[in-house]
Image (cartoon, rainbow, N blue to C red):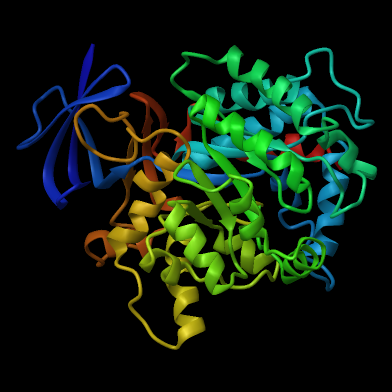
Amino acid sequence: MSLTYWCEQAWLPDGVADDVLVVVDGDRIARIGQGPPPPSAERLPGLTVPGLANSHSHAFHRALRGAAQEGKGDFWTWRERMYEVAARLDPDGYLRLARAVYAEMALAGVTCVGEFHYLHHAPDGSPYDDPNAMGHALVQAARDAGLRIALLDTCYLSGGMGKPLAGAQVRFGDGDAERWAARTDDLAAAYQGQADVEIGAAVHSVRAVPPEQLPVVAEFSHHHAAPLHAHVSEQPAENAACVEMYAATPVQLLHEHGALGPRSTAVHATHLTDVDMELLAHSGTYICMCPTTERDLADGIGPARTLADRGAPITLGSDSHAVIDLFEEARAVELDERRASGKRGHWPAADLLAAATCTGQASLGFPDAGMLVPGAWADLVSVRLDSVRTAGAKGLEAVVFAATAADVHSVISGGRRVAEDGRHRLGDVGPLLAEAIGALR
């Protein structure tokens, strides 16, 4: 059964157009046209854009919002608070929390999430009866919330360079990369042929995966033609420790062991050398910027414009979910660049929105999403142009530089209505979040 949507305005590959008709058949766009709305068409006021991709998520970090802001500190002190939350989760609790977090994402226009997943085992490090119980909970949560998911199963083997896992970290580890790969192979087999789920791989960081283990993770990505993500150079201390131990930066280490390439994504990439930037760009590696987290954790401002100019595609993620708002992430890339350079106008709005849509979707293994074209996933996100934030503004700039997640009024994901009039199909998401987070405190 096909459905027709009439968009007051829509962002098409050639730009913003008026009176756009989108015919949806199942989970795909069947036809794009223009004209007055037929009587049977559902009207989508405002500006309709493709579904947004949140390319880097740690769902359980959402429990820290507003709870880790007091006092002073840095990334490393914040990390201890994060470990406290990680120690309290089990599959049932994670399902409830992730479902609510993904529903919050859906209300913000996100139709696909890249979940960087390393809470694999019980708090004492022993496997659950199903060793992938936590991963299955995340997939179910995404489906309940109406999102596609790239579950980036993360290899996490050491507690720092040359240090064993300790405390909350013990539940992250599989012993070695071969055992990680065997477990993740089973996870991939469970979702083989299911179009809404991509099982990818991740290297938590060069702190957490010794160099001799990296090729195993890279081989998983090659064998499954799956995404491979890694935290890279988020902190200067990480770079200094890597150079001291291996006489190489994290980017160089990943390059030497086959972990960079067109299916790979370097997350953060904040503190890079010129050589690092060349290696990332020439390998075709995506760069995932997470500006709201990077500023929340005092990480710094990454060289996004320089990386893009050299050929590295830019994507966006909300990471620790200090806020979940991909429009804020997008404009922060431009605004942070202004602060660092003293100049304006580094990124056109269309380029920033592409990072949040088609480029992000491709980096998660869904290259046929994030575009309003026939054959693409039927993801339609409609943004109000008459709110107190957007009224009087025009074009993509109204969305990228003025709108917030609160201006998203309608979300269709994979041909299914997920949100209407700013309300998720699961109901009021606020109480769902409060209940799931309250159970962890």
